[in-house]
Length: 344
Image 1 (cartoon, rainbow, N blue to C red):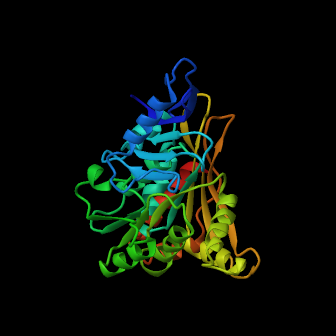
Image 2: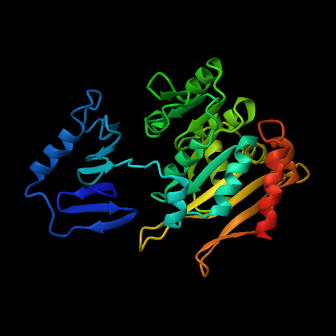
Image 3: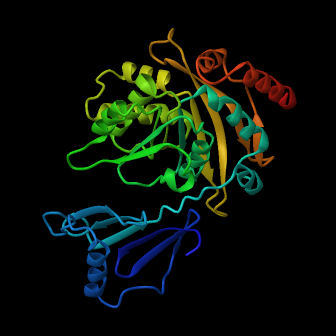
């Protein structure tokens, strides 16, 4: 079904669909009996032999071979039997098409193309269904094909090799005996240039993403569910502290500030389903401020009245100095200055 993101069945007589980020309840669609609904719930996980659903194991999380993520809960954990099927139908959308759709504009994409050779660590942030993974795939497409990539995910959702068969990509998935840190250590042994996490959800994933960005793999990327660039820093800090990875808030904030270079904020118009970039923000490490060791430098911000992204600030000298250590050259710097002249 075109643009279908999700099917959520809260109980036998409540079925909810989500199309292009917009949720729609279908009042005349329901199961005749509770038993028929429960049969469907059981069949939805029957392909996974490890998914034994019973009162002692009242929740099952699994993934179909085509990438659909299935979540099932039953009593006594949930009030009713419930089934959620999430469709990861992120598409490879060309830059030109993203511009045509109004998701972004030419100047934003030119900036991205110019700075990516400097291997900035990037996190794509936003609400659920706002197009984070779609834009992450667009960024991955601009990574130099000479660089090797490792993806570490709880489920295989990115499928980079499907969209970019010319790239050197290895993908690892967490298992009961292979966690996020194990996958990170494997990546170090494999000498991967860039590590990408599909979506950071757990404290452990948050920790290994920071390790990748600071220890080994400049140019690493991931996505994170949050509501603003400022909230990202504190939501990420709280996640790091949940399992005792950090016991000092200041240390957590400092590591986030030195690890992440660029935040790309995606958003969705819940009425129309249109996805768009809301802001591009640079995080600048501020070593002189121990309580707030960062500054947010907004490069572009979406103007609702004009309906487009507006240029706000240049990238910092700190960013340029780091970028010049990698494939960012004097030619990139010239292109950047020419872009600023057009924007100012």
